[in-house]
Image (tube, rainbow, N blue to C red):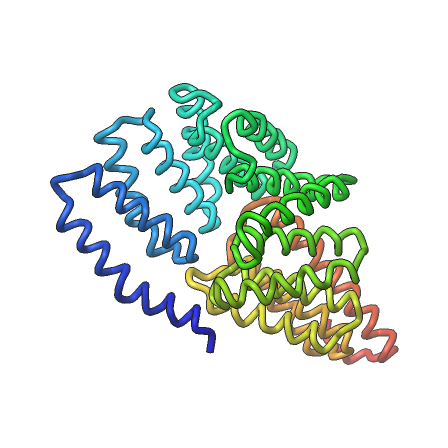
Length: 359
């Protein structure tokens, strides 16, 4: 039993529901106070991964602020950015993008670049662009925000550290730039350990990215302690229901497979699949990719029939999920095709000439 998960379920079922009702009842005649409390609640819920529960207070907070304050005030822009971030976490990228572009335009026009709200809005847009595969524009946005941040944010500010790490994230996905990304990740991780501590969620994200970028460069032994610490930290801090924990488990499973630690790799891949299946809301795209990793681990263990069934399930789930983000679809299709090729080559090598084998 993971007590972080139990605590989240209890909070969602009791405290959060009662708090939302109390905000509506007690502050209906004080709309700006009501909006501030709703926004705080929505931000907290989003941080906990309770996206569906966060939606109603987030939409209402933005609605109130637009009506009372207008579109150009920093509080309204903050809520607009927060809604865009929430939609992005729900894989509703096409809906999120106009909100975030509106927020950046309004912030630049009304507040100027050297304002924290503007920097946050540009950062959020950069994250979205990364998510849809527009890595060059994402990099440009992060560099723009960093330029403003140097003038107005302290180097220990969480947003300043996030921008440095996010720039690394944009570089990591561009050909030939992983060494640059590694330097930024290492700098950000060192900074976050000092300022935020080892168990802060930002520090855990930096650990995960360090492990991944090292693995992508073939430095498997160097990557292992980072990914082990990330998995242990996410389990402890955010619980097994959180999507970041699932991804940390997935990445460590991939690493262990590449290191030849096959039984543990298969166990982690299976765990990532099972946890993702139980996610609320369902994360079908994540589950499909985790199934590919599970199929690859089963192939390495020469459990070929199970591997084939797993990969076929991954393909069917991805097709049913309606994931429409082109880069994600491309990455998945390439990974799935490679997994099938490796499976059948290994199967034919182990059991040559089996004409009855299904394909």
